[in-house]
Length: 194
Image 1 (cartoon, rainbow, N blue to C red):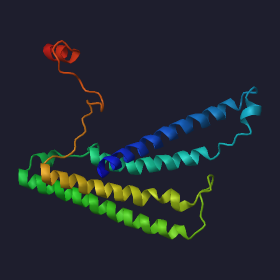
Image 2 (image 1 turned 60 degrees about the horizontal axis):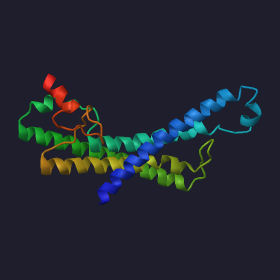
Image 3 (image 1 turned 180 degrees about the vertical axis):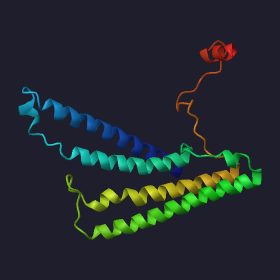
Image 4 (image 1 turned 120 degrees about the vertical axis):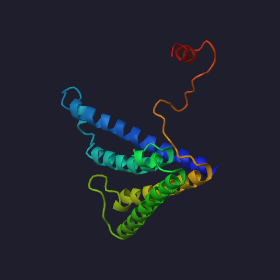
């Protein structure tokens, strides 16, 4: 139950960040061009969107940190496994586990360094230039995203030890859409042609 909530929260955060940033960029660009039209100038000129670019940058950084953890969980990170695939099964398993544990170690170190950095910023009065929010909130994505990525590496390693299976992203499959395998369906007709 906890894992399902964490997975869904991760997906909602990523989708919200990328969707919000895209919408905000669109609004800011439209504002910039429409304010040059005399009809819209009196309405749009008083609206200050100078903070929009900074917020979009922060949203994309947060999305990237949590998206990296999502990538570990779903197996969508690019990996070169030509050499690993020709190894003997026992050596292959040990090599894959070594790589996963190295990823967990690296992300835990980055998370710890990020946490120390954020902790040091809390006592300062540093704020972001346009939004004027405390800087430690902006940088909080480093420890949170890194620790989540570390957890995902350990989760994948645990699943691999128990089930001998790594997550693998299938680019031809769209989540939520299942092709029916009934006679007479388009999928069955396409399969028959092959």
